[in-house]
Amino acid sequence: MSSPDLDALPDALSGHVGYLLVRLGKHAQRLFSLEIGALGLRPPHCDILLTLSAQGALAQVDIATTLHIERAHLVALLDQLTALGLVVRTPDAADRRRHAVRLTEAGVDTAARVAAIAREVEGALLADLSEAEAASLRSMLRRLARDADEGD
Image 1 (tube, rainbow, N blue to C red):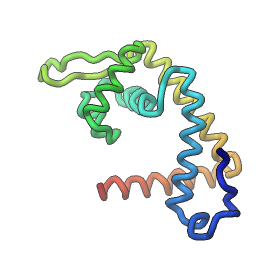
Image 2: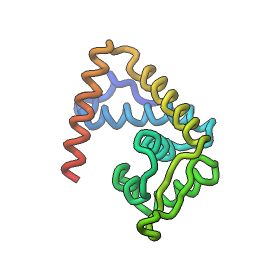
Image 3: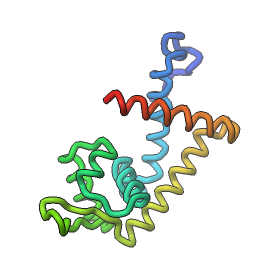
Image 4: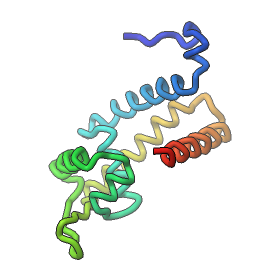
């Protein structure tokens, strides 16, 4: 199914920031999902891998909080990543009810591949923008996302 030409849409849609963000977000996720699918991953897996790559070992609850993932859903995602040999969970020495999650060696390599794929997809998405425009867009989107998080 092809998507409607943006110019053919009514101004109420083509001029609406929310509609445009959703439309672009779906396109970005489709491109990213196609690339990471070859690795046996989905976007939420990549969120976890990149977070652990940047922050090191984290408690499951901290991952859930950081990424806004329901804890039950996170457990399923971690089970999948564990089965792929990308993460390991170990009991927290201070509180055995908690588990720390860390990347395996394969997880570190895969996180680096995912980051490269993300850069490539972003490059394709922002190809029509100058470097300054792309930096400005990132900055504005971060600010809006931060404001949205504070409202949740």
